[in-house]
Length: 358
Ligand code: KG4
Ligand code: ZN
Image (cartoon, rainbow, N blue to C red; front, side):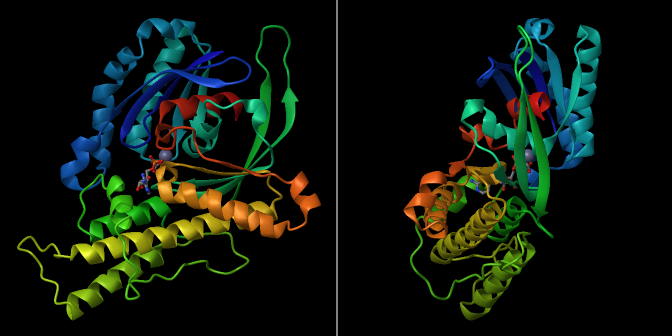
């Protein structure tokens, strides 16, 4: 089974052809035009520019994956919600036209479900264990989903098996998403967009500094919801304090001249504070739901420290939760993240998987 998938929800015009052989979802072709350099001078994605660029680029991106293959696909999937309306409409218009012209069924896909199903790319579907809790952490959303699979409907003859999944959103952020918080703190440190490789780099140069500590915001013990707006405020007020006490100068363009040492300490402590809350809540939520698989997806799941912390803390915590050897024999939870980092951020391939099995 083959599908063409189109994703234009934010600043990537991404198109993929993915195939499923009954066991593994494989990306045959994927091509994306990234608008990062177009938005760089504005410091973040400008929605109007994003939608105009999608309409300028969509045809050439489709050419990259080879137009001649479109008549051979079985379905066409496209992201229709949520995210930037002006960007989404371009992908939807292109997919609607192709579906009508080539007479292929059109499948509308929820972007966040796409992130959840990015976990299935290049993995054997039969290896998955359910129930699965998934933390989807990106620039615009930060939720915990429960994915269950009760039935496996194997259809007759040549048709592929169809899995039926139930996806339930259980908890979410009450204010900012983790990715949004990373983005805004990066701006406070006067880093230009795209900043993401820098936080880990600076954090690795950290030296223990008792003057730079951030409170981990858990809300309450019983709550699995998130809140990250206070994290931004903590960084903001710490910088204000240092500006006064260290007499940090402002440059001509009003940028704060923050000492390198302080930048490294803030980057480290901020990353630790966000990662710790994300992982601990995911693990607690999974225990609450008796999950067999604990997974992270979305742009923030590119973060190396988050990936590492999930494995380390997850294994330790679940061992102490099931301390007896007999119990641990029956509970071997899996910790998953998308197989490649390109599947963590917005991409066309994940939209196909979601379109097929949601
Ligand atoms: O999923 P995505 O590509 O787009 C949305 O659906 O939002 O995620 C983008 C978000 C951005 O907010 C960015 O700050 C975050 O993912 N991100 C990261 C890293 N790479 C991307 N956050 C932390 N560490 C990273 N390495
Ligand atoms: Zn996304």
